Image 1 (cartoon, rainbow, N blue to C red):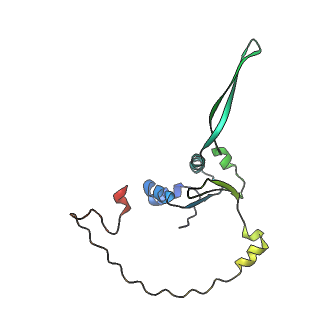
Image 2 (cartoon, rainbow, N blue to C red; image 1 turned 60 degrees about the vertical axis):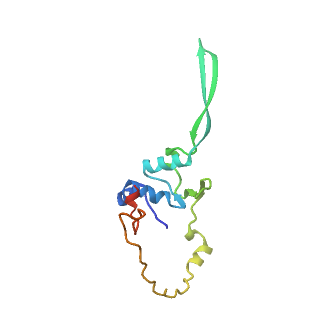
Image 3 (spheres, rainbow, N blue to C red; image 1 turned 90 degrees about the vertical axis):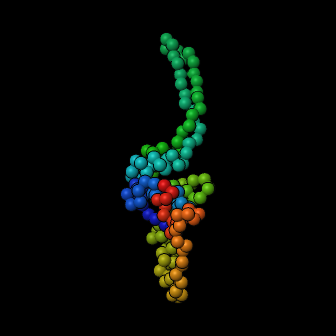
Length: 156
């Protein structure tokens, strides 16, 4: 499945919050361009996670340094602001259980080789044979509790 969205709330509007989450969680690959929406940028930032950083502190008495300290704390890999300031060609991508990545969008119109390949016509496709009807077992209140076809609302 491949979908293109300007921000994640578009799915919420079409499917509702719970079904939209189900759709998002079942996408194997996710590619994000610079988000314009704060909520989408926050979601991406939270998905990217955190790394370790140090906070520095300094105490002065009578103009002289009395003590210094530093403490380790979680720092976002990319903050919401950094995500919203990405260049037009920058992308953030997630693929299955691999670590997220950052890349640059490949624009076919900027590559003569890809532009040439784009001009190659697709091969002919034969018509598929007819598919026989699938007969599902009927729902039974005393059966094993399964209903066909399965309604996702039964599980939310």
